[in-house]
Image (cartoon, rainbow, N blue to C red; front, side, top):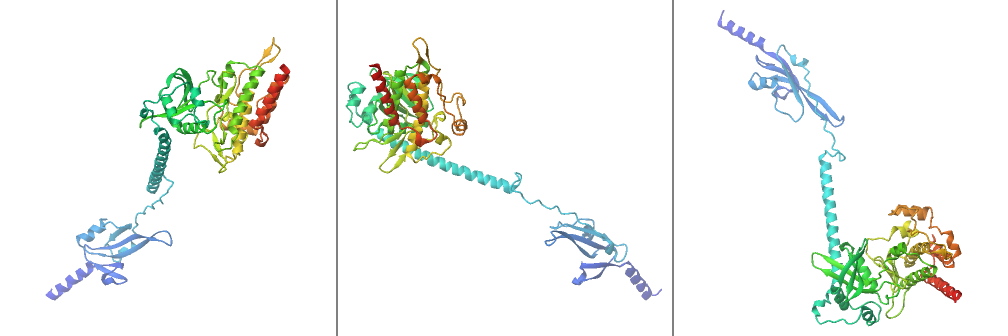
Length: 510
């Protein structure tokens, strides 16, 4: 065979080993579609990748066809060693015949659809960030409110304290107080607003505590002595400074002194930067509160009348405005109950505990309501307070609420009054109002249900019908606890009614 023949033979062999592949999207010279050739070792390929179609809302396959050279890189791709792609991609290869890659159908792995972040899911990052931010903001706001509250509270405390600090007894070592307390009070300014502050502070420094005689939600009451005279010292809890401020302010009101209002002697603040002790020094009455007295004693009609009249007299003085240069504003107690009424040695009563009292300023037609979080005693709350229909800016509404509570106190006293002949005198056991309707410590809802919804009032015993004082008292108390505040008697009207009854009783005895 000639040289030319051998050369042509080799060409035919080589031509037979070359195979054609279909190409599309990956063609030589960037032609649109057609064929490409591979030599031995090369591969035809078909690849597919996922492309997200926004219109359809899911992935659609995009196929590419072409030739891979016989170098190492091409073979590596066919073995699955693809460079990672952002989108899912897969490739298949063949070289067994021409255009073999047209029959290849590679599939790509489904791309997982990410779940939309849910702000209600505790496991989601946005929810955690939102929760943390809200918690931080709320904590910050509460902290700011607490700081402002503490600062304002300290300013108020300091303002009140400065009034007493200007008169430190230590600066007056030669200060002498002569005579009993009764003389000191009579010799004071005459305004009826208590002793001068310097004298009050001097007395408080010389008080000798004897024993505790009572404890309540405001603090503790002690029997004490000042130069041999018995006095009562009310020591307030540190959380009750507003009650101390208010009670001190009420007691030092001009023309406040009255025989049926607990006698005020002195008020003082003791302490350092770390602790504060607030004292209120008053007259001491060994019989204690009306609540305690009624449990241990029965009353005859005369004693009952004296007690009821004295309470009405004290309440009338409290409610009445006295006009003049040194006048007295009208005051409502707002916590009338048997525990806040003391029994004096002469059988009369006096009203105590003015931590919730309000003053009516007629000049500006405003009510001076104390910034105190305490409320009255639920058992003695009037219907309008329980159903929240009371107008807190109407001073008469507060006075009428006092009269409702006073009616219940009259009922407590009336139960302990004896009736019947000398041989058979009867008196009921002491009970608090609504003892048979609500628990010992009733809730606001308990009282509202009984007083407002069911319109229940304490029962009037039949035995009262045979006693004139109790008959009159029954009529008075029923008008005092009427559901309509406008119908209730005033303290002055009750005082006059009981005074007339006292006069009639005296005339009959004579």
